[in-house]
Each structure stands twice: as structure tokens, then as C-alpha cells.
Length: 118
Image (cartoon, rainbow, N blue to C red; front, side, top):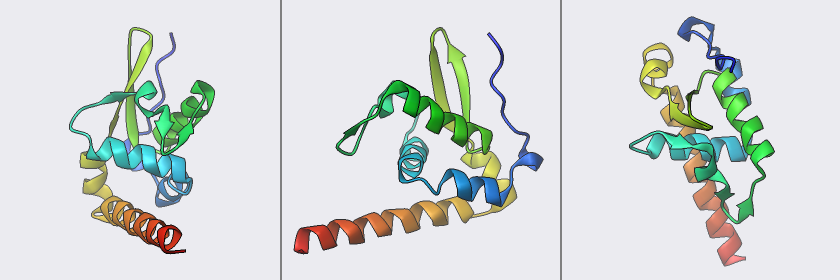
């Protein structure tokens, strides 16, 4: 099997990160990975919110996150085990990723509140 491409730290761009996190599903995947204490396989994310995501859709989302440099994926048998690169990225981008995650969480809270009160 071909090795999975992971950009070097100096190849990761703000634009690439923002593009990858512009999709709510990818933001949810990244947020859950970042909050997790251990690496997760892709199937752990098959049930996001109320949606069931096909494997091909999940693979596409993980590929975009990996190519943006947000996650590292390693093959373990037939599974891909994913973890964030938050530690590495914090060196280069400071608190940017944490700020994006916090803003997304606040946005979800507001949307949840609005949908409950409407």
C-alpha cells in the first residue's frame, strides 16, 4: 500500500486549514478528535449528529483534513487510525485552531438555543 501523504509543518497554510474546517462535518470530526484522549478510526465517526455517513464520504472528509495538515492518519491493518496534529500546529499557528473550535462550539450552542426556542 502507498503511504498516506502528510504535509510538512512548513507546507501547512492558514488558507488550507480554513478551507478544511469550512465544512461543518469536518469541523465536527476535527473537534471530536481534538477533544479525544486517543487516536480514533474512521468508523468512530460514522454517526455524526443525527446523520449516518457512508464510508466513502468519511474517507473524503478525512483525506481533506489530512491533506490540510490537521490530522495524521496511520494504517493499522485495514483501518486508518487518526489523531490531530494540534501540538505541532500550535507551534506554527498559535491559538488559531483553539479559537476556531471555540467559535464553532459557540455557534452550535446559539443555533441549538434558537431551534429550541423557535
